[in-house]
Amino acid sequence: MAVTINDIAKAAGVSRTTVSRVLNDSGYVKKETREKILKSIQQLNYTPSAIARSLSTNKTNTIGVIIPEINNSFFGEIIKGISQVADEHNLNLILFNTDDSKAKELKALKLLKEQRIQGIMITLTYPEDGVNSEYLNTLKNLDIPVVLIDGHVECSNFSGVFIDHSKGAYDGTIALIKEGHKKIAIITGSINSRPAKNRLNGYKKALAANNIPINEEYIFYGDYKHENAYEITKKILDMKDRPTAIFAMSNMMVLGCMKALYEENIVVPDDMAIIGFDKIEALNIIGMNISFINGPTIEMGRTGMKLLIDNLKNKKETRELKRITLLPELVLKGSEKYIGKNKV
Image 1: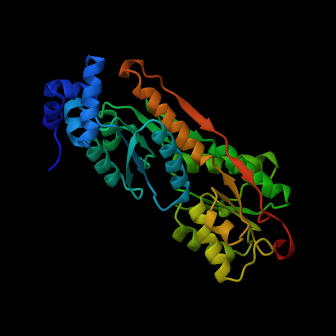
Image 2 (image 1 turned 60 degrees about the vertical axis):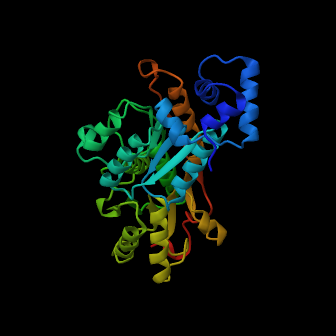
Image 3 (image 1 turned 180 degrees about the vertical axis):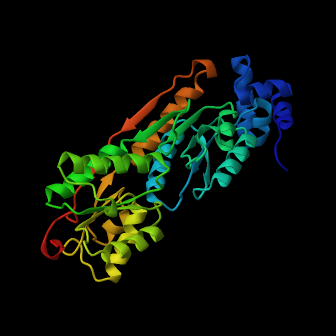
């Protein structure tokens, strides 16, 4: 039979209210009485119920995390950073994966509200109707701290941690240009998302800075998924004036590109150069040296969690809005080279 607060009170010879004060660290309790209660708790091997505690305090020691792609290592590393800081502050995490679905995101928000969580960290999907969308209104009405982890927000009153996507794409395109590439294809992410727009702008700025005309035929609009990138790469390989390099705007799209190149016996970088956005650990393991733009993902998670904890310490009216932008890093591994048969 489970041990209850009443059992602790009886063993310690105190009231149930006094035991509750000790368990919730609320209200004054004499030192000797507190020690007697703690000893009884230890002897009876009592474990307090998180559910019961949430009912009495109207909150839990839990943070909600909502991401769009749990199978993407980009978000896996962000969660790792979040978890590291959460552990340091004895906070628990509830994780939701939305598969880029606004309906699933809205459902997750409503479920988290029912769980009496302390705060939310979220990578938003791409709201076509802007800040008036139902789930953004739901987010605002939760009345708890919210921290954005990258993603798409045209305007909001939420703190967040972001990557400088424009700089990352600019640096990656410049790396290809320095190798001698002028025919550079880009496969964007979902173009209604801010990261995709900023990455495309970075690509265009790099071309303009080097007096290379922007060829709209080399701009392909993807969706961050490998399936779409696979089909687009097939089209690129069939072009009469074929590009000498492909810049894929996500790690998952790089996988789609590589699959298509492999099927057509295209060797990287001899026949086609390629560079991606975000690293793919699996490619490193099997020795495929693909150059990429590395977002500081673990640091994003840690920084975002620290922002949330800062907000938890302050009342709503005194919470400070903070937007932190982290710089990505260009990692060149040879796939950006302009050599051999790709000089068409």
